[in-house]
Image (tube, rainbow, N blue to C red; front, top):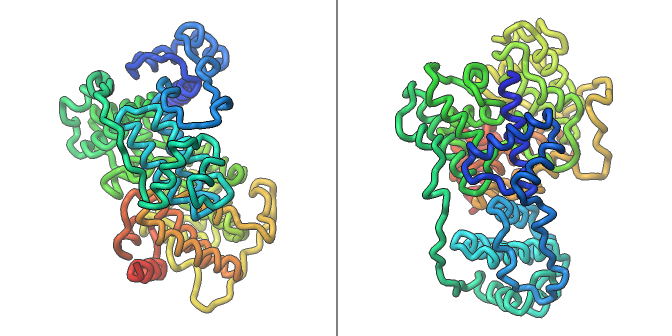
Length: 498
């Protein structure tokens, strides 16, 4: 375990080095070696190791800052050629999220992002970065843009871009007159040795080949976009799975028996088992949830940081934690707290839970939580229509408040769960209509104090928002979103109106 933790720490430190724009070696193995040796020579002190690498390798964010303060006209396409690739990708992601302050400007933002991203792909770095920055400024602008004249009041928008805004308003897109560049992409010509080790021979256990291929593809993609730490960690995990004699049947099993696999990669292995591919990346250890307002409640963070005493119980702990956290953030504190407390007790238990009856032998597990555990064991997740009954007025469970559960949601404000859903566009734009419909209905239920139903629909909205698949039917949504029959029927009706 300590060995895995040290590997994750080096990967994390390496990502910090990239953010500081250090001149790291192109080869991921060499970059990892430099980072490891720097940490070792500085006794594990990251700040000192960072300074050591700055002196050794050169670079650093202080030496690469560029100012736009003296560029009132914008449209300067030549000044960002040295920006690292991963910085450019991050800029594109920031421009996409959150949506435009004025919905009427969203089509302009989308057109500038599409154009800027295409310019980066074709090698026009300065032009691509400048358009992405303009997209971000337009996104944050609080007035409706109706003409080129209006656009010129915005930072990074000069005469050229103002005319492109006119194009978008008139034609819906920016017309591209840029020639292709003959740009050499090093990652295509100089793959690290670890990729050849994985690709040249099949996995020792044929049953593990799907994990090897998916993780290697993901790792190479990260290297391609300059995310050396994340790319290397996934490639190393793929290599360990490639060489193991053990047939992998779950993420937790992989983390136990195979090197270089922590919670994040274990989650991806579970995704591959369920969907045949990696459908989304994780934001923080053990959870794929977007969290946009505040830190997790202390009990949630504790459950994220400390694994179950018995690995066989981890799936139940994770499902109860995610379910309880959603209800806590949706204003249904009683139900949220009761499930989180049960998750903590099961996490600390020596008893392997195989049924609801066995679960009730553990403290804090009453009838409602036991039924939820039975559902998790039966179908693999905690979401269903069993959480509310049509026409039945619900009462929140009474529990004693404690600082472990975080501060109660203040009345009159939008609950954090709603903000979690609203603050991120769907991973696939085609799913946005479904996500919005679910979120609208869920929020309406919360406002009408129909909390159980509201949280159920909002959780479904969050699941589908993060899905990498385009939802075309209620049946598909039920599988991908881990939802019940009533929510699936609602999605089917929404799709039929399209």
